[in-house]
Length: 318
Image 1 (spheres, rainbow, N blue to C red):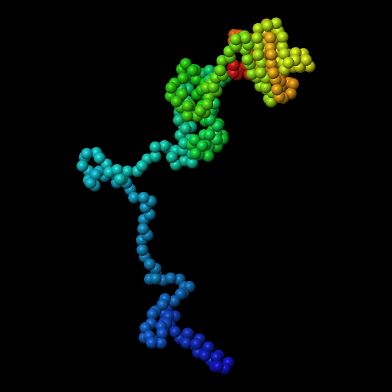
Image 2 (image 1 turned 135 degrees about the vertical axis):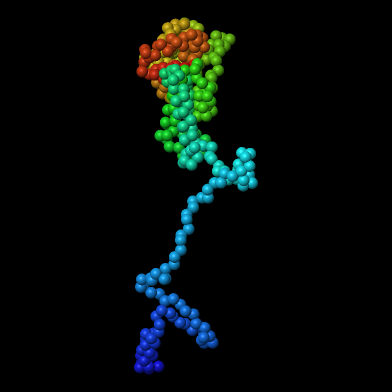
């Protein structure tokens, strides 16, 4: 086909398109079906006429069908029995849809209980019963909720306030509520075995300080002291360490009434002296349990190296 014939065919095609009706497009499908034609709506960018608009009312949006509280059988029979299939299930907890429902319920119940017993007499926190509360990690595991530290401390503040209620007036419901937040092992559950005096009149005491440990036997005598087979002066070169080791006898004025044999291992000289302080005090209380208040009163005269001895007796561990 020459270039001239190609240009003539193109011109005739444009002329045929110009004569065609723009409102409808006709297409012939196949050579054997020339009389089958389908009319197609042509695309147009002109404004739609009113006749081309589709008039239809949109459906009303319904979030959920209303609850029909109808009695059994769909009719009111006057027997007062409702159809349970049409009732909604109400959560037992008002905090069910919150991020931390268990913690929220616990905090609300504790604060409500505190308001109820707020008028009861209280005691100072230092005199309140010693309680080991659960840590935040233990509470998170118990509730399986990511409780924040600040919120957990607020709940502990409420628990400590409830624990300050006078023990003789403590309601049972408060004790039951606090039991949920206590550790399994409490400070008062483990009690040391009482010391005994053997057939030779000796009382044994064990003390530890840092990495030092001491074992002491105390018996009535004239005031002799031997540590690891050496006298007190030979074993401790500083006067400060000697006073620290025998402070329990000094504060109770028993230096010339008991003999002491001891063995110490580990740590430095100061740590060994303070370990002997606790060991001698434990053995002395086996002989004379009534000396415990005297040891407490002697805390103001303690040397600086005997602060651990004072801390031990202030906790009442003996």
